[in-house]
Length: 316
Image (cartoon, rainbow, N blue to C red; front, side, top):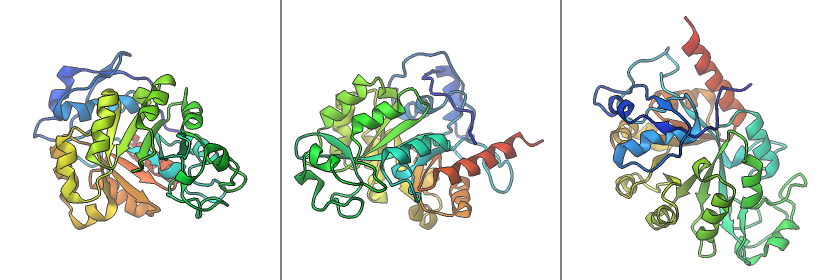
């Protein structure tokens, strides 16, 4: 089951951006022609971010919902993000098999965790240690790439490198969200260089956990899109002022502070939410709250939900 989505990078129509930033609420934003996407200041950056993901898809990032399609679905598009590639039996998290499955099941974006090795390579692994997801033990940073490649990451899968993942998604419509783990050995310059070498600068979103990392990646390549993995609600404003393109919120924050999504939208930033293993009904509630993207452990479930949303839109 697939939704119509294209990987073309296109240019924002400046005059079409004005309605979306008005206080009247969300409006459709037009896009046209294949051209490089450049950084724009302030709220315009957030609107232009949509062109990195989907052609002819409207990602509305500011204001309040103008209407509801029905009791379940809103009238703006939602990005499906496969958290760690999906955490599904038979497809170990953060492995190439999980990423292939996420592509097949319709994910728009695959979220991956980047860590550095003892010999300066970049691998994909969530935890700082090997114990939970592999047959090895100890810190990732204590091992060379060759040592890590000898481990079983589940079902015979090997720990992938960042370059292997770039090669996998190259030529597909799927984008990458990088969770940049705070680490003294993760070579950020190499992350950017590999991304550039594969021609995927406009297909990668850098997820920063600190303002220092956010600033460094923005300096290394200003055309890279960025997402703030903010630790606490009170850090949102600092990330916004630092120029982040997307704000990630936890589902529990949205539940405890119903106006939080709207507050971020008023900053001109899209909101993505980490829902992990949330039920379909909870994900529907999160979407109705105004979020623009959902990080889910179950990409196939998200594909069904968004297909349902698309059908509701097309219904007479």
